[in-house]
Image (cartoon, rainbow, N blue to C red):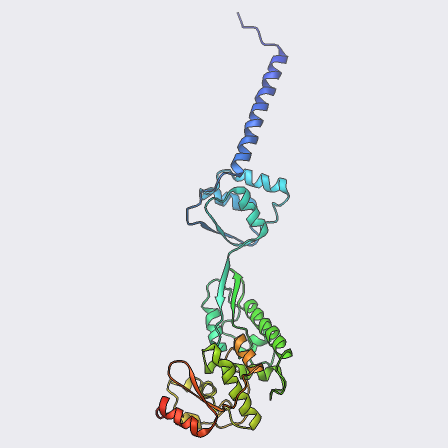
Length: 339
């Protein structure tokens, strides 16, 4: 004899109860999973999101790598929040303790890893380009191009690149281009130079901001001692005012180019080039390096005094002299056989 079937209303009640219990458990699991830490090692995890990659594809990839345990929950949460299509491509550093919820916020905000590249005061443009090419996180778009083409791509055709870029530490995301970084450095130098030129001291023998940039590059190469920059700038300013030649070794070295072997000889001082300030009066035609802000300010606010000469002591500092006789004695003392 068959057992009597339960009334239909009892079956419906059981189904409703089961659905309610199941739905409640699912909601609880969903909420817990969103705030459960990802399987990230203590040192963190580097995550790269490719351009155009969907959140669903990324969630599956993280699940396959054992990082994310409930990939569908992450996608569902993003859709509920209306941000499923707003994740940004790039390189992310995921710290230990990150949860699916905080990961999604990071991806939507685009908090990508910022790499750093320092352009050093006193570098030539050749050194700048070498540093750009050696940076693996930068996308190379200028490799092999002549300098003139680089300047054209910056929208500055016909400009000489030397000294045009501001030495500083620049941050950029992986995949940023060398051209973008150079453009930022160019614009930074233009801003700094314009501001400092506007506040320059009166009576300087400099007609344009570019002339100030040229002289600042010489000051930058003459000393690494910050306190001496206004003193050296003062010497050069007074020489220009009196029609004296600058007689700066770094300009000679720059003019020699690849022919300079590290040893500056008397014959080199007599070898005429557009940059030899022993054989030619006035400023050289272009900067010889990237000047820093201190060098620019020193040129536009030189220290007062009567010194017209200086010679290196050999410890990084210099002796300043007002007369040629004093200078010759200093040379004899500190640079035997020197200039």
